[in-house]
Structure formats: C-alpha cells, structure tokens
Length: 358
Ligand SMILES: Cc1ncc(COP(=O)(O)O)c(C=O)c1O
Image (cartoon, rainbow, N blue to C red; front, side, top):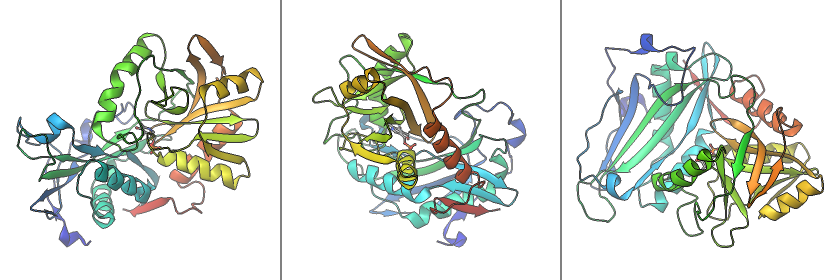
C-alpha cells in the first residue's frame, strides 16, 4: 500500500507541548493523529489518517449494546534519532484477525495495518518517548457500527488505530504481584471467546478483579471453568512457572489469550536450552512444587510490563510466598533480552522488530 492509497489529513494544532514526558500515565494522552477506515457494502473503504479527536456514534450503535468489538495492544520503542522499533506487528496482526473471525468482524490486511503504523509513527515520531523503559503504546481496534437495535452481526464497521506515549512500567524496580484464585468466577471457557481480544472478556473480568483488589491482591489468577483446577492466565498477562529447571506454561487450550510476550518467552527459553513444557498445570501441582522446594520462579508476561514477578499466590486459604523482591534469574534474563531487542540494544536475530525510519 502506498501513501497515495491513504488519505492523510494533518493537524494544524499539535498538542505535544502539553505533554509532560517525565510524568506519563498509561493510556491518558493520545498522539496528534489517528488512523481510521470504515467498512460498508462488503468492503473496507479508503483508509485515512486524521487529527486525533472525538468520533461520532449514535445511541443505537451495535458495539455499545452487543460488544461486537476487537482490539490489540502493542508497543513501539525509540531506538535512535532515525529509528523507531515496533515489536512483532505481524503476530499482533494475526491475533487481531483471529479475534475478528471469532466475533464475525471482517478481517483486515497486514499491508493496510503496517502502512497505517508506518505513517502514524512517522507523523507522530516526536510522541515516542525516549527515556529508558518508556514506549509508544499502540491501540488498534474495530467495532460494529450499524445503527440497529437487533442482536445480529453488523454490516458496518469502524477501524481505528490510536497511539499513546507511556512511562516506564518499572520506575522503582520490579514490583512483585500478589495473586488470588477467584471464588465462584471464571474468565472463559473452551468454545467461548477467551482466546479472542474482544471487549466483553474484559468487562466480565472487572468484578472478580475488583473483589481481589479489595482483599489486597493485585490480580486474579484464573482457573479453568470446567474443573476449576488448571491454571489459565492472570488479568492481562499470561503466566509461567519455573519448576526445577523446566519452564512450564499453561497450554493454549482455547480459553487463554495467546500472548505475544508469552510466545517470545517460550521461544527464548527453548533457545537457551531450558526444558520447556506447554501443558495443563493444576494449582495443586504448583503448591506441591512449592512444598517440595522446586518452585523457583513464577512470573506473568505481557506487553505492558514484559515480565512481572509473582510474589504471592493465594488459593482456598493456602498461600505460596515467593518473596521475590528481586526477579528470579530467568525472569530477569527474559526481561533483559526482550527489552534489549525492543530498544535495539541487542541484535534482532529473530526478526521480531519492524523498524520505522523517520
Ligand atoms: C487477557 C490477556 N492475557 C494475556 C495478555 C498478554 O498478551 P501480550 O503478551 O500479547 O500483551 C494480555 C494482554 O494483551 C491480555 O489482555
């Protein structure tokens, strides 16, 4: 897709001088431009880049009522004055299309996606923060835009990409998270929408997450919906266990979001010669490994934090205390390697990074 295939309307009122790059909060301010494309009569229209701003929807819009909507979350990193690195856009786009298929949203081409990102980042490259640990968060999303109060697949869709500079996740060192299994709630079930990044999954998780937080925990550790026994994932992260010298990660059985960071961690672990197992792992197995002294490290993985050490797990009145003020050696190694590749300090031998030349 060439630039001439995309209509670009520049803002004449940049807001960049309003931004305090020393105090960036997650997802609160948005760069000057956004990508937008609309679907009607069975096809995506000509894509556009427009000044960031409010969009008009009507009260009868499908997505507001029936949550026919999908999103992605990814990041771009400042490498040097000529280069911004986007981390694994192809895998994010594959997941975007997989999610769309699950909720009957028409797929989009990678060509349009990557040319939208190239254009947006070139135009708003000054919004990519430069300090260590900071990044430009990228939020592509599509929602059903039919104005019709009927619970059925929409004929019209709107596709946007907005970007937001975000601060370092770990400003004062790693903060180990405290997890609890939810009492009486499940996140997803096989055959449902758990492996799609669709809005309703998140709405459904808010109440159990709020209850966990009211009880002093950071996040919910989700168990499978049938037997309430097998570990699935955490809030907005996948989870990994280093048991002895084996990295055990819950298998993607259909109800877990296939994380891009998860996939990167597993690939690195294999290359580093660890035993790697993707399989069902029960909460009892984790407690047994802890009791036997074999549970070495537990950490979450996700775009926001890369890796997040787990300090405590509570389940039915029993507690695992890992007291990881410092991340374990393997967790730290994953963090250093992935962030090294993201910021271009480490050679990208896996072809994970898409460079945007500015
Ligand atoms: C439910 C859920 N699980 C896992 C993840 C981690 O995925 P990724 O590594 O692609 O950010 C996320 C974040 O996107 C998420 O929302």
